[in-house]
Each structure stands twice: as structure tokens, then as C-alpha cells.
Length: 379
Ligand code: SF4
Ligand code: SF4
Image 1: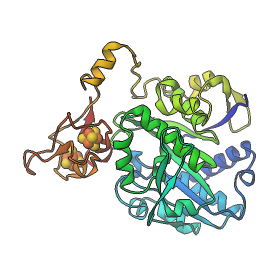
Image 2: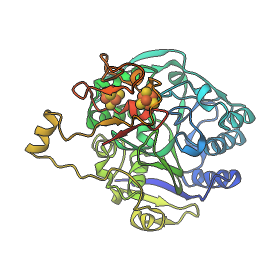
Image 3: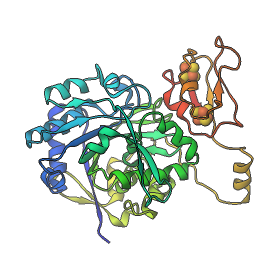
């Protein structure tokens, strides 16, 4: 079996020239950008733009990383480039406004677009998802580049290369997707189908400052001091998992990603390369660049009669809860809840924090992702 190449670029901070030079070296190690993208192709850059947030909070892909990639494309003579995401809250233009990403895009003549229309596409080959509603502008692109952020995730433990592709689903259909694929496993399998349908040409991950804890929207920034690059999103996410001392197979997108043929999770099939082209074992990479204290869910899954019963009875499951002291009663969690009859609502009046009906809750954690005040946690 051919090994998947993951480029590990150690990077202390977001110094512009440093990030740009490292990224160039990384692309060379993958065979050069011209091998990956044709000159005439229409390119769509897809950063993680979950919601509007200060850059220091590590919610979205850092503008310097996006800027460096944009600069390389421009210098290599690529012309037809746009940037977009199906944001969790807000639109591409609103989320990037004032972050510095907008300034880079202007500097390099790249348009940030708001997806305008959803198009229904059939995918009979899909093992979990046989159809998607995708933005028209995504379907018009020839080549998609994923620029993800290294973060934790309440449902999938981590969000990285594979999960970043959920922004290829148009608008409200993302919320509907959570009700169609409510478990971590079914959701992960849908994500694998989605990646196999869209086939991003390259996956880049910004882990210079990552997010740990209550991610992907309300965790804590933590320096991981790396960027990762690969054409294999499962290998990339597996290296990410290893760096944070999480068994890759505990991440549903890795487990199913390997089984469904999206990429390699087994480190015997992953080649880690440093900027000088030297190969490093995954184990050595973990020793040198890993963080054993990274706050991520490392709970082992037990499959037995008791865990199956607990799941069926909806007991001992992870659940979101609201810290009433932090809640500002904005209602974003209620609007984000994809369950039609709302599993979180202002049942006690709008002068009080919303309350959960755990019988209705499908544990998608959209409410926790979107809360602007970090008032929702998972226990
Ligand atoms: S989103 Fe957060 S702050 Fe807003 S109402 Fe819900 S819990 Fe409160
Ligand atoms: S209450 Fe939160 S976790 Fe439960 S279904 Fe609604 S958005 Fe998902």
C-alpha cells in the first residue's frame, strides 16, 4: 500500500514571512503546487469560518495562513480564485470582516463570496449519504483547497481536515444533516462521503495556535506550533490526533475514513516529512511536537450490553448544559438547534436562560458550537 505523506511544518508563531516560506517548502514536498492545481482551474479556498470571533480565540483559520496560501497561488500565476465557507453563523464576508483575512484577500485580488444558492446533488455511491445540498459556487469550482483549523469537537472529538468539509453543505441543510445523521458514527460516515464527492485537492491545517477543551467554538487557544499538509485528510487528522495524544481510531472520521477508503489512519501507512525533507516516524513527531496535556476527550469506547442499554435509554450520554451566569439570553443556541420542536428553548421565559429537553436532544452540540458567550459546556 502506498504511504500517505503528511508534511509537518513546525512554526512558533504567525510571522508572515515564516508561514509563507514554510508553506512553500511544504508544497514542494508534495510535488509542487503546479502538480496539484492546473493553471486554468477555478479554485475555491475553504477555510474554517465557523462564526465571527477574535482571531486570538482560535475559532477560525488564521488570516496569515490563508494569506500565505493566497500569495503562493498569485505568485505562481493562478488567477481564478475565490474564498468561501458555509459558516455556522453569519456569512463568509461578515465572518472575515476586520479579521485581517479580508485585507489579505484584497491584497491578492481574491474575492470572498457568500454562497447564494443550494443545489441538490445525488451521490448513489455514497455509503451513508446518497445526496447533498451544495452551494452553486462550490459546484462551479474545479479545485477545492481545504484550509482547516486544529480544534476539539464535542461530537467527533476533533475537527480537522475531514470535518472542515462540512462547510460544503449549503446553509440550513447543515443543521438538517445533524438530524439525518445524529450519531458520531453516522455523521462521520456522511463526512467521508462528502469528502469523496467533493475531493478537495489539498488539505492544509493551521495548528500554530490550536483550540482545546470546549471546542470547536468555545474552547481555549493553545500553541501547538505546527502546520500540517497532505492530500490525504485521514492521514492528516490521524497525525493531529497522535500529536494531542489521542488514539486516532477513537476519532470516528479517522476510523470510518480508513474503512471507507478515504485515506490512511494506520501510522504504518503514513510518512511524516519535515520542511527539510527528512522523514520522521509518527512516534518521534509525537515526542518532539506533541502535547500530552492537550485537553481533548480521550475516553475509550466500550461496546457491551450496558453501554448499548445506556445509549438506548439515553442515560450516561454526553449532554450540553448552560452556565446561567454566562448566558446573555441571545437565543443563538435555540436558533441553532436543528430539532424542529427545539430541544433547547426559552421555556421559562426570555428573562431566564434557555433550558434543555434532553428527551428531544440528539446531542449534535450545534448549540454549544454557536454560543457566543462560552455559556454552553458538555458533560
Ligand atoms: S447561545 Fe449562549 S448566551 Fe445565547 S442564549 Fe444560548 S446559552 Fe445563552
Ligand atoms: S439542544 Fe443542542 S445538542 Fe441538543 S439537539 Fe439541540 S442543538 Fe443539538
